[in-house]
Length: 106
Image (cartoon, rainbow, N blue to C red):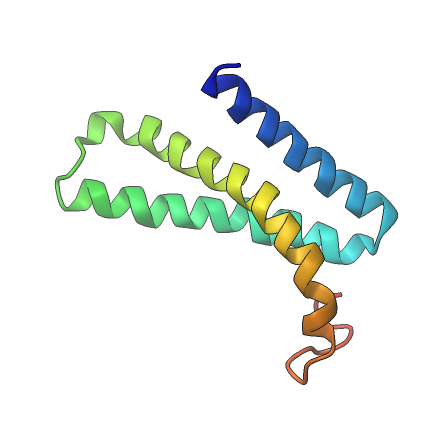
């Protein structure tokens, strides 16, 4: 199995886990996580990260779109796999703390 196949398999597995969780559990929480915790966070991270690299001359502007795509797609993979696992395992603990505000995000 090549690294590309592992890459694609982990991305698909992460998306399947998130969709399954959204179907089985609280939809509002998972929709908020998928939209803001995965896609928006990845896009903002990519714009700031790649923008800083371009601004300080570390990468030429001609490759900006390719680097931005790689950055954002890589963040999506990590957040959809590792982030989803952390959310599932840590949410019950966070809900028991005073920091949790019921009905605000979930």
